[in-house]
Length: 268
Image (cartoon, rainbow, N blue to C red; front, side, top):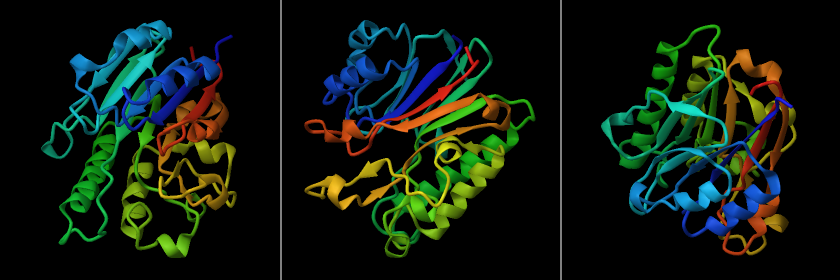
């Protein structure tokens, strides 16, 4: 079998939810696991636990209490070019290249705070600047045969059916028109294929995040699709299956994000 299973998950503290990661890996056996918001410095990352899960290869970029991204793989890879976005070393991006030449980019885009106004909210300005740099960077590196996979918590729900109420969230950070426009520029930068919507096209609702504020998240289902998996056109034919693992959102003291799994065929 040459199938490859990739999973991405904003775990919201890898040490606090290590048991959740172990349970998820045992149940779903991803070949590549991309994590965001690991919230731990590299020297305190629980690497031994991931080795026991079968992840022989890893790349981590973490800091204390905030942000942090990690890529774990059962397949060999080499680190690829990663940069400091917006001149900040805030651990929001990692990239690796598999032996078959496929690049995997793991992003944690800034959330952007609560006020969608760059003049009143520095966090929102940072988010838009970050996304602009992403679109410019990928445009500069674009080639027709690039084999890229972009995953992560991009903190934008771009489509009307990526949120529980389009009209009500138009002025809420993560679904404002200006954020959607910035994401569209990133999307166009490499003619990306939205792997999740490849399998679940509009107008079907599709969410990966639910607020902790809801007493019963399933009953209220006020979700947003903040987590994404994109591939370049060269990999479109390899897409096989997608799943948002909703059960993980039910576990005790869960992350507010559910893991996303995408299966590829003939990609090892």
